Image (cartoon, rainbow, N blue to C red; front, side, top):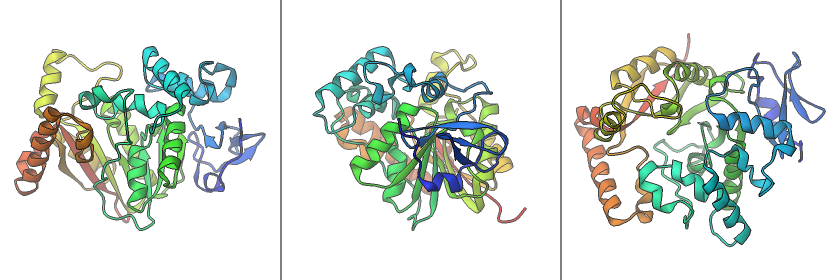
Length: 350
């Protein structure tokens, strides 16, 4: 397990505990206060061991990074123990990897199930190509972008293709390794870090853009506020954040809330926010904020995925796209979207 590391990380990472710079010491990244972070095959694992994790796979990622003997023996190089999939799906990953003939990384073939919810159920284990969407940002022209909660790297790749110098961060070591393999397979340059969005391990004012999709909607409201404060910190003055969240007023959102009898969310349940609440909190913690519709009738529907969907799902996608277009001229329609984008601009001066 190599601890060699790209010099970019040494120049731009910071200790997630105290914000100090880092140096390589005995194969680990260490700050002046003695906090250490392992490096796994060139990937910095910047998770804090002194806080409660938001998701169990973060605990497994940290354990595996510190103790290689914690690897799942079926496929140690795939970091199965740190993937957010069930045991049946892990066995499917092992079998796909053993066959070695697929066009898609075996881990991605199963992680895709969490990419767009019910729209991708039939694709789990059967993916024939990488579903890379169009990221709704202007051309990057070399600007820096952080993809918070990157998972297998879908949006990081989309950003890199649009000209951004993209960095992805995720608490799953296995997902980050899959993201790196995916980027290499698709011929794009990206970097990845294993870390916690509540304690971003980057220096202040590093990124022009911070992007996040289908991540914060799973976090408790107080954790989201911690993340937003960190987003503001790592953005350059005048920098932009674009973050997807689930709205409480969407048709499918209301359906899911009714199914769980409007009980408080538990574990990895989606947290539904009211649009006005989103605008206020993002504006307070980052800067002036606007809302726009991402999609209707679900979370994660992307036009680029149409070729992978059956006829009924393409119809749902088409209806969603039509309403998104309508919302651009009739603003109140956006308030009925299931999935919203919140764009926030960090002030240029205090």
